[in-house]
Image (cartoon, rainbow, N blue to C red; front, top):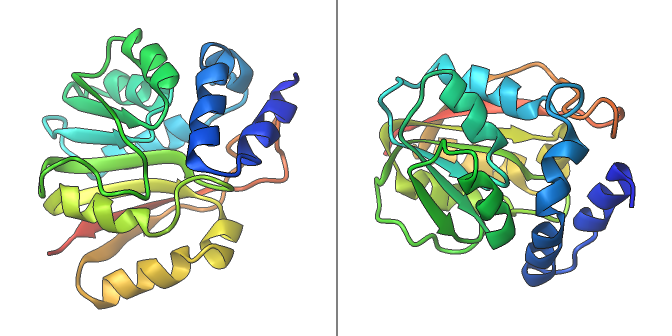
Length: 209
C-alpha cells in the first residue's frame, strides 16, 4: 500500500477502535512513510511555533503523539519534560524508542482524559484535528488539563476549522473566558509530496481560567 493510500485508509476509519487498529498496523512504517525531512513538516512547524511561547522547563503533554515526531522536534529545541499520549499502543511503542518522553499514556482524544485538572504547563497536538480523527470537543479536555496561563498549540486544516465545528467551539471557549488566541500562522503544506492540496495552520491559545 502506498503512503498516500495508507493515509486515506486511516482517514476512512469508521470508529475509534478501527482507527486505533489501523494506527497499530501502520506504526512501524509511519515515520518512513511520512518522511519528516522531505514531506511531513507539521511537527517542526508546530514545534517552532510552540517554542516562541513556552519555556523550556515546562511539563508538556503531546496529545496524539503518534510515533513521537513532535517529541523529537521539541527535544531538539531543548524541552525535556514531555509526556506522550495516543490511542494506539503500537504508535506509543515507536515513540518510546525515541527516548524523548518521560511518560506514556494510552488515551483517546474526544473522551475524558485520565489526568487531573491543571496537570500540564502546555499542550501540543499535531495532525490530530483532521478528517476522521479527534472531534472539536476534544479541546475542552485539553483546556482542563492545561494550567491557567499555559499554552495549547495545535495544527488544524482550514477546511476542518470551518466545517467540523472547530470555529464554533474555539469562539465559544474564547467568549466564555476559557482561553484567548495568541497566534495563528499562515497556511502551509504539511505533506507536500503526499497531499499537496492540503493546508494546515498552527493555532496558539493561552488558557485563561
